[in-house]
Image (cartoon, rainbow over all chains, first blue to last red):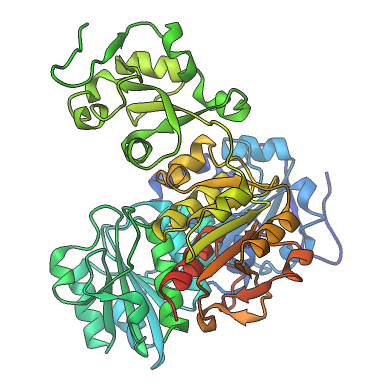
Length: 273
Length: 273
């Protein structure tokens, strides 16, 4: 099998599922739950496109199903020259990852050192939008919020220790690459998050079903931080006591999904008023 | 096993997975894909609560894991007297449905006759909000849109033939019961949808990334219909040509999720301007 494609990137053929060069892709589902080795998994064309154009993360390698090479040629030509691109027959690819993988293209990213939250806040422009997540353990919701943060141009996401790792495979996929495009920085807890935002001159807006103000009536401040808690518990009372609290009025229904809520609030903070 | 709970509802014990009284719950996953018998599956406490309080659909029966009976007593006491409530040991319940069911409570609803779209539109109050879905085949997205439609008090959802059945199990679950709370009516296609909305005096607003107007600048009309198409293709060009087209400006990112988009637009139509 030769899949060299002059004049584009060379695709290195991988014939055996136990080839050590693709060990990073082995048992992708379990790897997710461990995630101890500073690597993360990128799935699909849309996310890899973001990873190659607007991501702070370096890639370690790319693995593509041989039958996708012709269609995805333009994408793999953009992979940096020092990053190997492996090609495997679809059945071999399935055997490597441990389940039938439909997307046909995967890559391994390197987490690197997490940005320092204070430094990242200080580096933002005067007019900026930050999202703060507290206790958000659900990968779909975290991914959805990052997708919205990217769509509305948030400059930074702060995540407390109660949140899941945004670089979890499913969160990245749901974010459509937003996790790679929007920088995020860890903070120990919600109190420290508010301290940092206060020091950086952000107006801290906490979304809560029992908020004092109505979102639609809020005049967006030039430097806004939007805080979101998990569905169900929401933000801790001690955080609500220290912030401007805002609600989205609803009709006879418990609550919106938190990712949808983030979209509504970010849209208002960017385009409202 | 006797699980009669005076003075509440009787729970009829089911000891065998092949008991014909619980045949409706057998192989729930496959049943979803067939869905030919006019029945649908309700899962979990939140959705059953909606089904018992604000749904047009009659229930056929309820099935509860015996270990949940004490905690869910108040809910099952609200089941109408002519609807049997069956109780099964958790292992028997798993064997009936064909996979480990964590929610512990299921019910079967009866689809009944679909409402007539023109009659349903005519019955709406002067100030009303309608959502129209065209070609939305993704169950998560349809469920998410219904959740938002319920949260923002939409009076009706119109669904064209390209949409999935909103009564698909996953759509109901994702909607948090919104599919049961908000009436929906079928229409043959997008053209017929616009015709009906025009006749009923609705201002028809089509969301599109290439819309002429910006959502945030739109003054919400008293009688608004919001049209949404599938992610990717969007609404057909011939529908956009006949409607007021609105976009949500985004920053260097393909698009928002369509369910999130619906939440942003419905929030604006209810609370904006």
